[in-house]
Image 1 (tube, rainbow, N blue to C red):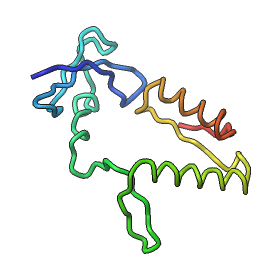
Image 2: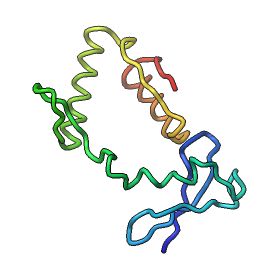
Image 3: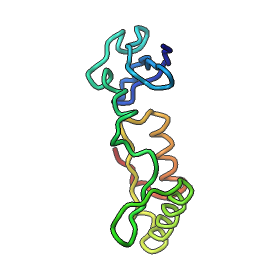
Image 4: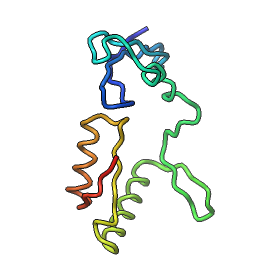
Length: 129
């Protein structure tokens, strides 16, 4: 069994933990004594690995068709549709019609990129958590 050091993303504390990996699959977690939690994890940290291989987890983008049903598509198709829709909204209603949400489950770096994308690319200051 391998151990992979990572940072828990459930809150802003930044506890470090080890993912226990067996045959390429994450099977558990261990706390890291050198992290902010000093070898302790909250219940979210202890169960952080459970969503990774959950059968209900979405692994590919879905687009709702005219029939109201979702259809699995590739990432290029999904991202092109999102870019097209955002450009249309920005053109018709202005940048302030767009808002972007960050997350406590994201890292500081990911949240920085989210707000940078919102402000520099989309032209909106509507960034929330």
